[in-house]
Length: 125
Image 1 (cartoon, rainbow, N blue to C red):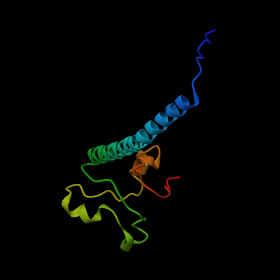
Image 2: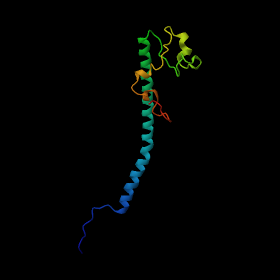
Image 3: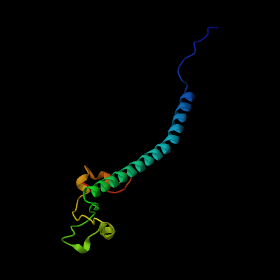
Image 4: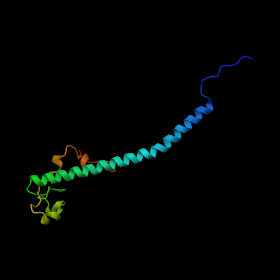
């Protein structure tokens, strides 16, 4: 009786087992990757906040200890709508600089002003 040489190809059962193992591994790894992405976004947000605080500190050193403005409107045209550092002005020895856009002029893009995990539009253009 002649002996048939064994074929080296995968059987259908072996192929299905390999595909199911790969699918199982992908199912286990995707949540871990999402967690890593969330951790990376938190780290980037903390880094952005640190950079903004360093910028505020540098601004204060350059302007006799005064805090940079954080005004939403031009306070000269409508003093009642001023929103920003005004609440802290009486506690700072140098006062507050009243010129809009001081922080904006020190950033290349507005992305540093918003955490990457923030939902919704970013109106920095």
